[in-house]
Length: 266
Image 1 (tube, helix red, strand yellow):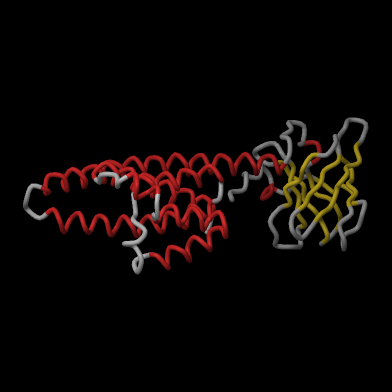
Image 2: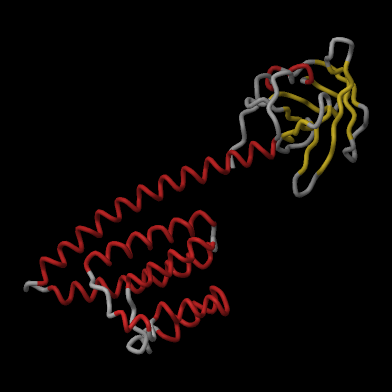
């Protein structure tokens, strides 16, 4: 499960937990100090991690829930502790457990409210739930936007420093059916790709004035341009397999390849 989804699920679970705490009184302090669902899960996490906590919950709920009372305030505290650890798997597991607990609690509250004096408290609980859901949705949107921005920053760092002097490297290199094109990207990098292969352009990383590199899970190479007296490329050398090196610049980019290459989306 993606990290961002686990984080957002945990945030929503925390919000729901806060909502229910508004309408449900806390249990006796002595009950939490003794046996409780939260303390059992905390101990399981310490001993065996997320899988142990899931297993312990399955043992307790619902067969032994009377022996290990559940306190929404204590469960929120447990989740807050795990937020600080940074374990998204654990947060997701606790979010799932919390959802199950809250669904049962809400069902009990609805069943007990009826039309008597408790109906007002149930209505307040529902209103608080709706308001908290709106807040949770807004928080999720902000978190998702922050995650996208972080991904964009990481992608930019992987592609290296942007430059404004790269037009001098653009053009066609090689001869006949074994030509390589080199063009600028819209965010100030350099890209290249063989004309004879239907592949995504290689997004080059600047290593020196006329030296560029590329690396992914399948391919790693370096490319160095030979410059004339005006600093414009006239050839390139590389360490790619199956391609001649050096490759002389054979001309400008054809019309269908002119213009900058848009930044890839991930």
